[in-house]
Length: 331
Image (tube, rainbow, N blue to C red; front, side):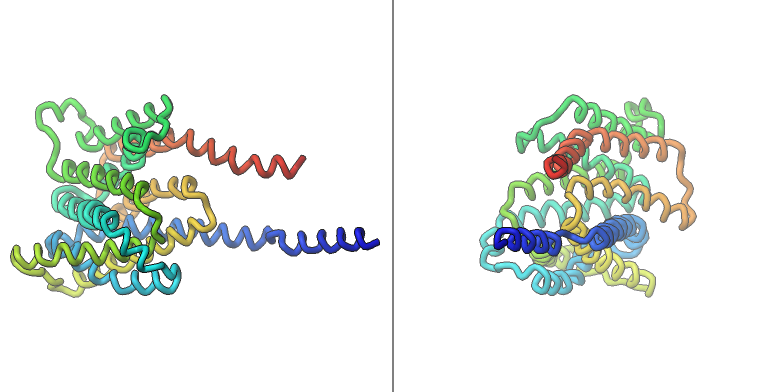
């Protein structure tokens, strides 16, 4: 009898501990909405940033962006992640390198690029990033690169060349690359370096790491900005509103929403949503009256297709890893 009672108690406890499918469904829905919000705000950075650089120089824009975002990032990091600041301080060389490559290098090149090319073009070139990261990971992190992944990288690169050349790749041989496109390619390369360094760096809570990188970016950029003519402040209400949007939505809320989603969804699955940055940028620019070319849409579709092909092996591995536990349970 005692063994039967213990068995019944064990069954009841297992039922109590079993996750409620409705709760799981709600958590997954919230995670998906969080990813949509994060990518929408990052797309907004392209569109709003393209307007902001017409009034604020890129150096001032990057400085003001992270100076405004710094306080909320630090508060959220402390309240949500409660990091061990001694461990964070010990990782300062890694965080400095990440700040220089990501928060400074990428954003400066992006905003300088937006002075010479439109937001949609910039986002299309940026869509090549995941494929380039896969290639860099194989070179520097010894990650396996399959023939399918190589084909995806080549496909994505072809799409980028179509976008840059306006559909006439032969023109690049005579006319070369445009200034904005070259700056955007530089931004992609810098972000790839940021990603590789991030994978090698000590594990720091993500919002905490972003907050510290923002503090380092402000500290590094302040003397440069003031030594080269001083800070350019918003001259109109619309410019001030653009600055506040950039400082709050893509700089703070996108990181919070993205990392919230990663507590529910696998990183590889969430990474697919980064392709929506280009889609959202296209929608936002069309809504604001911009006209896009067929080369942009065709090249963009090829880039995104190449990224999906590049990451297909990783998606299959993740799907198998999720299925294996279920298969064991079924038997």
